[in-house]
Image 1 (cartoon, rainbow, N blue to C red):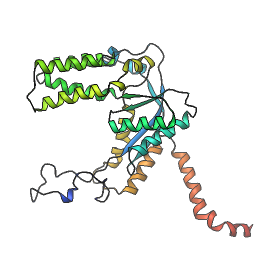
Image 2 (image 1 turned 60 degrees about the vertical axis):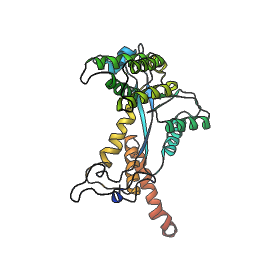
Image 3 (image 1 turned 120 degrees about the vertical axis):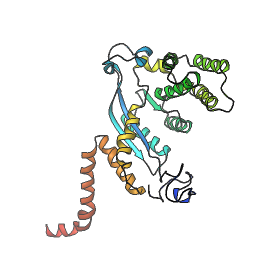
Image 4 (image 1 turned 180 degrees about the horizontal axis):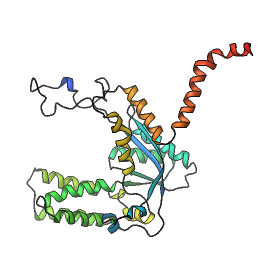
Length: 300
């Protein structure tokens, strides 16, 4: 972003950072002016026929098993760089209500576990009188398990992967308290260095699993054929935002960046033709009909 565009309260602007070297930037000096774009997606879940996936099938997928996974169809995207998460989540709920005004369908919200984001989802649901099942992205849970595994195994130890898979399958079975107890017991049997990195990772992992338990009901999600990962939104962050906004040498102001993001979201949602026809009609109204309507009447 150009230097006037970052949000208030962000880190010290690059122009105000102390320079350590005259001809080269040092550690912490290479970052430019950046601004986070908030992205949301609404989609219908196409539940596959046949038996529900098991935790073992999730952790050990067989070739071609993707056909038995739930599919995201009728995707609709929104992305904002000028507004906050509350606005983006509000738009997501608006679109979901447009699809289901009578609230007869099952609503599922997939999120990465951010407390503020979860609160916004719950506030929107309560305000609209909607029951929403919130699921934390299982991939985020796996990342925490992998970080904890590094604290209890030697680097490149093959047993590390087996340990992660075992804990992940327990969580998919709904045995989150047992996993928490197991990690705490390992930390007690092999105490990390006080104040060290391993101690911090173990503490964060235990806290994350404990705090997110209400949103880790993966047994119900698998039994119902629901998605348990946010691959749709992760992909959108890449192909909607980063592939265009992050190209080498690009510098964006807020109006241009927001216009580009809206246009890319409209195109990704499959609404570009309808939008463009509406745009041409509005331009014709603004540039011609609104100015020359009386002259056209006289000529007729």
